[in-house]
Length: 328
Image (cartoon, rainbow, N blue to C red; front, side, top):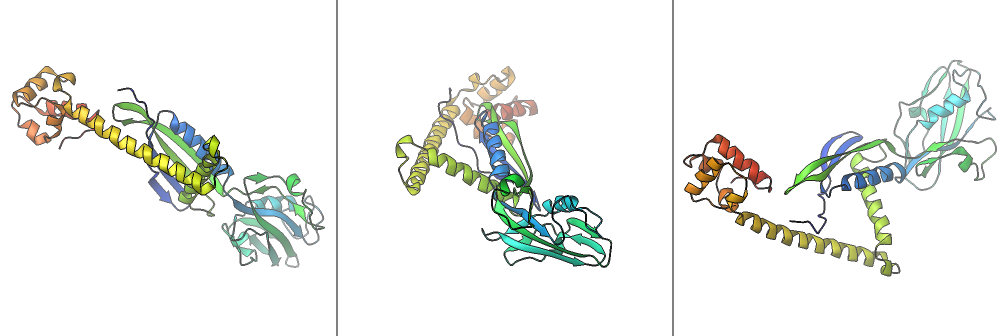
Protein backbone atom coordinates (compact mmCIF):
# COMPACT_ATOMS: atom_id res chain seq x y z
CA UNK A 1 0.00 0.00 0.00
CA UNK A 2 1.36 3.43 -0.97
CA UNK A 3 1.57 5.84 2.00
CA UNK A 4 -0.31 9.09 1.65
CA UNK A 5 0.01 10.41 5.22
CA UNK A 6 3.07 11.17 7.33
CA UNK A 7 2.62 9.45 10.69
CA UNK A 8 3.53 11.24 13.90
CA UNK A 9 6.58 10.17 15.93
CA UNK A 10 6.58 8.84 19.48
CA UNK A 11 7.18 11.07 22.47
CA UNK A 12 10.81 11.37 23.67
CA UNK A 13 11.93 8.31 25.63
CA UNK A 14 14.58 8.26 28.34
CA UNK A 15 17.61 6.11 27.55
CA UNK A 16 19.88 7.22 30.40
CA UNK A 17 20.44 10.12 32.79
CA UNK A 18 23.52 10.71 34.93
CA UNK A 19 23.79 14.07 36.66
CA UNK A 20 24.00 16.75 33.98
CA UNK A 21 24.17 14.19 31.14
CA UNK A 22 21.17 12.63 29.43
CA UNK A 23 20.36 10.53 26.37
CA UNK A 24 16.86 10.47 24.84
CA UNK A 25 15.25 8.75 21.85
CA UNK A 26 12.36 9.60 19.53
CA UNK A 27 10.99 6.70 17.47
CA UNK A 28 8.78 6.31 14.38
CA UNK A 29 10.09 9.37 12.55
CA UNK A 30 9.16 9.52 8.87
CA UNK A 31 12.16 8.69 6.59
CA UNK A 32 14.55 11.66 6.58
CA UNK A 33 12.88 13.40 9.50
CA UNK A 34 15.50 12.11 11.93
CA UNK A 35 18.14 14.48 10.53
CA UNK A 36 15.59 17.27 9.98
CA UNK A 37 14.44 17.20 13.60
CA UNK A 38 17.82 16.28 15.11
CA UNK A 39 19.72 19.12 13.46
CA UNK A 40 16.99 21.65 14.31
CA UNK A 41 16.86 20.61 17.98
CA UNK A 42 20.66 20.61 18.26
CA UNK A 43 20.90 24.17 16.93
CA UNK A 44 18.11 25.38 19.22
CA UNK A 45 19.65 23.68 22.27
CA UNK A 46 23.02 25.32 21.59
CA UNK A 47 21.82 28.80 20.65
CA UNK A 48 18.44 29.50 22.22
CA UNK A 49 18.56 28.47 25.89
CA UNK A 50 19.41 31.38 28.18
CA UNK A 51 22.30 31.14 30.61
CA UNK A 52 24.37 33.43 32.82
CA UNK A 53 27.96 34.64 32.50
CA UNK A 54 30.33 37.40 33.60
CA UNK A 55 30.11 40.32 31.17
CA UNK A 56 32.54 42.75 32.82
CA UNK A 57 34.84 43.03 35.80
CA UNK A 58 36.95 45.49 37.73
CA UNK A 59 40.16 44.55 39.56
CA UNK A 60 41.56 46.99 42.13
CA UNK A 61 44.87 48.41 40.93
CA UNK A 62 44.43 47.16 37.35
CA UNK A 63 43.72 49.43 34.37
CA UNK A 64 43.62 46.92 31.50
CA UNK A 65 43.52 43.19 30.77
CA UNK A 66 47.22 42.93 29.86
CA UNK A 67 48.47 44.05 33.28
CA UNK A 68 50.50 41.95 35.74
CA UNK A 69 49.68 41.88 39.46
CA UNK A 70 52.34 41.64 42.14
CA UNK A 71 52.01 38.57 44.33
CA UNK A 72 49.73 36.70 41.90
CA UNK A 73 51.05 33.82 39.78
CA UNK A 74 48.74 34.48 36.81
CA UNK A 75 48.57 37.68 34.80
CA UNK A 76 45.24 39.46 34.42
CA UNK A 77 44.57 37.88 31.01
CA UNK A 78 44.82 34.36 32.44
CA UNK A 79 42.66 35.29 35.42
CA UNK A 80 39.98 36.50 32.97
CA UNK A 81 40.24 33.25 30.99
CA UNK A 82 39.68 31.26 34.18
CA UNK A 83 36.73 33.46 35.20
CA UNK A 84 35.09 32.77 31.81
CA UNK A 85 34.96 29.09 32.81
CA UNK A 86 32.96 29.84 35.96
CA UNK A 87 29.31 28.89 35.41
CA UNK A 88 26.54 30.81 37.16
CA UNK A 89 22.81 30.37 37.60
CA UNK A 90 20.89 33.62 37.77
CA UNK A 91 17.46 33.58 39.43
CA UNK A 92 16.49 37.01 38.12
CA UNK A 93 16.55 38.78 34.75
CA UNK A 94 18.43 41.75 36.22
CA UNK A 95 22.28 41.92 36.11
CA UNK A 96 23.89 41.13 39.46
CA UNK A 97 27.18 42.26 41.01
CA UNK A 98 29.37 39.67 42.76
CA UNK A 99 32.72 40.13 44.49
CA UNK A 100 35.86 38.12 45.02
CA UNK A 101 37.95 39.24 47.98
CA UNK A 102 41.10 37.40 49.01
CA UNK A 103 44.05 38.12 51.27
CA UNK A 104 47.14 35.97 51.85
CA UNK A 105 48.76 33.00 50.15
CA UNK A 106 46.56 30.33 48.60
CA UNK A 107 44.58 28.97 45.66
CA UNK A 108 41.57 31.09 44.74
CA UNK A 109 38.55 29.23 43.36
CA UNK A 110 35.05 30.10 42.18
CA UNK A 111 33.62 28.92 45.49
CA UNK A 112 35.35 31.92 47.14
CA UNK A 113 33.19 34.42 45.23
CA UNK A 114 30.79 36.38 47.45
CA UNK A 115 27.35 36.02 45.94
CA UNK A 116 24.15 38.03 45.91
CA UNK A 117 20.95 36.23 46.89
CA UNK A 118 19.88 35.79 43.26
CA UNK A 119 23.13 34.16 42.06
CA UNK A 120 24.50 30.61 42.35
CA UNK A 121 27.92 29.29 41.34
CA UNK A 122 27.59 25.96 39.53
CA UNK A 123 31.34 25.26 39.32
CA UNK A 124 32.74 26.11 42.79
CA UNK A 125 35.94 24.12 42.17
CA UNK A 126 36.91 26.14 39.09
CA UNK A 127 40.47 27.45 39.60
CA UNK A 128 40.90 31.22 39.21
CA UNK A 129 44.43 32.09 40.35
CA UNK A 130 47.15 31.50 42.95
CA UNK A 131 48.24 34.22 45.36
CA UNK A 132 51.93 33.79 46.29
CA UNK A 133 52.49 36.76 48.62
CA UNK A 134 50.85 36.94 52.03
CA UNK A 135 50.63 40.75 51.77
CA UNK A 136 48.68 40.66 48.49
CA UNK A 137 45.03 41.63 48.57
CA UNK A 138 42.81 40.61 45.67
CA UNK A 139 39.56 42.47 45.07
CA UNK A 140 37.55 41.73 41.91
CA UNK A 141 34.09 43.13 41.25
CA UNK A 142 32.16 41.26 38.52
CA UNK A 143 28.83 41.74 36.78
CA UNK A 144 26.82 38.64 35.90
CA UNK A 145 23.83 38.74 33.56
CA UNK A 146 21.63 36.53 31.42
CA UNK A 147 22.04 36.11 27.68
CA UNK A 148 21.94 33.75 24.73
CA UNK A 149 24.79 31.96 22.98
CA UNK A 150 28.06 33.88 22.69
CA UNK A 151 28.52 37.66 22.85
CA UNK A 152 31.88 39.30 22.10
CA UNK A 153 33.40 41.97 24.32
CA UNK A 154 33.19 44.42 21.39
CA UNK A 155 29.42 43.99 21.39
CA UNK A 156 29.26 44.45 25.17
CA UNK A 157 31.41 47.59 25.00
CA UNK A 158 28.66 49.30 23.00
CA UNK A 159 26.80 49.69 26.29
CA UNK A 160 28.09 52.35 28.66
CA UNK A 161 30.50 50.90 31.19
CA UNK A 162 31.86 52.32 34.43
CA UNK A 163 35.44 53.61 34.42
CA UNK A 164 37.93 50.83 35.17
CA UNK A 165 35.62 47.99 34.12
CA UNK A 166 36.92 45.49 31.58
CA UNK A 167 34.43 43.89 29.19
CA UNK A 168 35.02 40.20 28.45
CA UNK A 169 33.72 37.76 25.86
CA UNK A 170 30.71 36.02 27.39
CA UNK A 171 29.61 32.44 26.80
CA UNK A 172 26.01 32.35 27.99
CA UNK A 173 24.92 28.96 26.66
CA UNK A 174 24.26 26.52 29.53
CA UNK A 175 25.06 23.56 27.25
CA UNK A 176 28.46 21.88 27.42
CA UNK A 177 27.84 19.59 24.46
CA UNK A 178 24.98 18.16 22.41
CA UNK A 179 24.97 15.60 19.62
CA UNK A 180 22.51 13.38 17.80
CA UNK A 181 22.46 10.10 15.91
CA UNK A 182 19.93 8.70 13.45
CA UNK A 183 19.35 5.02 12.73
CA UNK A 184 16.75 3.18 10.68
CA UNK A 185 13.94 1.21 12.31
CA UNK A 186 10.96 -0.86 11.23
CA UNK A 187 7.43 0.54 11.24
CA UNK A 188 4.98 -1.95 9.75
CA UNK A 189 6.35 -3.04 6.36
CA UNK A 190 8.80 -0.15 6.12
CA UNK A 191 12.37 -0.47 7.37
CA UNK A 192 13.56 3.05 6.57
CA UNK A 193 11.82 4.99 9.33
CA UNK A 194 14.12 6.90 11.69
CA UNK A 195 15.03 6.64 15.35
CA UNK A 196 16.59 9.86 16.68
CA UNK A 197 18.95 9.67 19.67
CA UNK A 198 19.91 12.98 21.33
CA UNK A 199 22.77 13.26 23.86
CA UNK A 200 22.92 16.41 26.01
CA UNK A 201 25.28 17.65 28.72
CA UNK A 202 24.47 20.89 30.57
CA UNK A 203 26.35 23.03 33.07
CA UNK A 204 23.64 22.50 35.70
CA UNK A 205 21.50 25.55 34.86
CA UNK A 206 19.00 23.08 33.41
CA UNK A 207 18.75 19.34 33.67
CA UNK A 208 19.39 17.63 30.30
CA UNK A 209 15.68 16.71 30.13
CA UNK A 210 14.67 20.36 30.69
CA UNK A 211 17.07 21.42 27.92
CA UNK A 212 15.41 19.06 25.42
CA UNK A 213 11.89 19.99 26.56
CA UNK A 214 12.59 23.73 26.32
CA UNK A 215 14.12 23.37 22.85
CA UNK A 216 11.02 21.50 21.66
CA UNK A 217 8.80 24.24 23.12
CA UNK A 218 10.84 26.92 21.34
CA UNK A 219 10.54 25.07 18.03
CA UNK A 220 6.76 24.66 18.44
CA UNK A 221 6.31 28.36 19.27
CA UNK A 222 8.38 29.38 16.24
CA UNK A 223 6.29 27.18 13.94
CA UNK A 224 3.03 28.29 15.53
CA UNK A 225 3.88 31.92 14.84
CA UNK A 226 4.11 31.24 11.08
CA UNK A 227 1.31 28.68 10.90
CA UNK A 228 -1.62 29.51 8.61
CA UNK A 229 -0.94 32.59 6.48
CA UNK A 230 -4.54 33.72 6.85
CA UNK A 231 -4.42 33.54 10.60
CA UNK A 232 -1.46 35.81 11.26
CA UNK A 233 -3.71 38.29 13.04
CA UNK A 234 -5.17 35.65 15.36
CA UNK A 235 -4.31 35.57 19.02
CA UNK A 236 -1.66 33.01 20.08
CA UNK A 237 -4.31 31.08 22.07
CA UNK A 238 -6.46 30.71 18.95
CA UNK A 239 -3.47 29.49 16.92
CA UNK A 240 -2.56 26.95 19.61
CA UNK A 241 -6.16 25.66 19.69
CA UNK A 242 -6.14 25.30 15.89
CA UNK A 243 -2.83 23.40 15.94
CA UNK A 244 -4.03 21.11 18.73
CA UNK A 245 -7.24 20.37 16.79
CA UNK A 246 -5.25 19.50 13.65
CA UNK A 247 -2.96 17.22 15.65
CA UNK A 248 -6.00 15.53 17.22
CA UNK A 249 -7.57 15.04 13.76
CA UNK A 250 -4.33 13.51 12.44
CA UNK A 251 -4.22 11.13 15.43
CA UNK A 252 -7.80 10.02 14.77
CA UNK A 253 -7.13 9.52 11.06
CA UNK A 254 -4.01 7.55 11.92
CA UNK A 255 -5.91 5.28 14.33
CA UNK A 256 -8.66 4.64 11.75
CA UNK A 257 -6.12 3.94 9.00
CA UNK A 258 -4.11 1.61 11.22
CA UNK A 259 -7.28 -0.26 12.20
CA UNK A 260 -8.28 -0.73 8.55
CA UNK A 261 -4.76 -1.83 7.59
CA UNK A 262 -4.71 -4.38 10.41
CA UNK A 263 -8.03 -5.85 9.26
CA UNK A 264 -6.72 -6.22 5.72
CA UNK A 265 -3.53 -7.88 6.95
CA UNK A 266 -5.46 -10.37 9.08
CA UNK A 267 -7.49 -11.39 6.00
CA UNK A 268 -4.39 -12.17 3.92
CA UNK A 269 -4.16 -15.80 2.85
CA UNK A 270 -1.10 -17.79 3.82
CA UNK A 271 -0.37 -18.54 0.14
CA UNK A 272 0.54 -14.85 -0.30
CA UNK A 273 3.24 -14.87 2.39
CA UNK A 274 6.11 -16.63 0.60
CA UNK A 275 6.25 -19.37 3.23
CA UNK A 276 8.04 -22.64 2.47
CA UNK A 277 5.98 -25.44 0.91
CA UNK A 278 6.34 -27.63 4.01
CA UNK A 279 5.07 -24.86 6.31
CA UNK A 280 2.19 -24.05 3.95
CA UNK A 281 1.12 -27.72 3.80
CA UNK A 282 1.28 -28.08 7.58
CA UNK A 283 -0.86 -24.96 8.08
CA UNK A 284 -3.35 -26.01 5.43
CA UNK A 285 -3.74 -29.48 6.99
CA UNK A 286 -4.47 -27.75 10.32
CA UNK A 287 -7.07 -25.58 8.51
CA UNK A 288 -5.10 -22.38 9.22
CA UNK A 289 -5.59 -20.37 6.04
CA UNK A 290 -5.06 -16.65 6.95
CA UNK A 291 -2.67 -14.37 8.83
CA UNK A 292 -5.35 -13.91 11.47
CA UNK A 293 -5.54 -17.67 11.92
CA UNK A 294 -1.79 -17.83 12.59
CA UNK A 295 -1.82 -14.78 14.88
CA UNK A 296 -4.42 -16.45 17.12
CA UNK A 297 -2.06 -19.36 17.78
CA UNK A 298 0.81 -19.57 20.24
CA UNK A 299 4.22 -21.03 19.37
CA UNK A 300 3.25 -24.16 21.36
CA UNK A 301 0.02 -24.51 19.38
CA UNK A 302 1.93 -24.35 16.09
CA UNK A 303 4.54 -26.88 17.27
CA UNK A 304 1.68 -29.28 17.95
CA UNK A 305 0.59 -29.07 14.29
CA UNK A 306 1.54 -32.21 12.37
CA UNK A 307 4.50 -31.60 10.05
CA UNK A 308 5.48 -28.33 11.79
CA UNK A 309 8.90 -28.08 13.40
CA UNK A 310 10.98 -25.39 15.13
CA UNK A 311 12.17 -24.02 11.78
CA UNK A 312 8.59 -23.65 10.59
CA UNK A 313 7.57 -21.78 13.74
CA UNK A 314 10.58 -19.44 13.42
CA UNK A 315 9.68 -18.84 9.76
CA UNK A 316 6.13 -17.89 10.77
CA UNK A 317 7.42 -15.55 13.53
CA UNK A 318 9.71 -13.75 11.07
CA UNK A 319 6.92 -13.39 8.53
CA UNK A 320 4.42 -12.03 11.07
CA UNK A 321 7.02 -9.61 12.49
CA UNK A 322 7.18 -7.92 9.09
CA UNK A 323 3.59 -6.79 9.76
CA UNK A 324 4.29 -5.88 13.38
CA UNK A 325 2.39 -8.96 14.60
CA UNK A 326 3.49 -11.36 17.35
CA UNK A 327 2.22 -14.83 18.06
CA UNK A 328 -0.30 -15.11 20.87
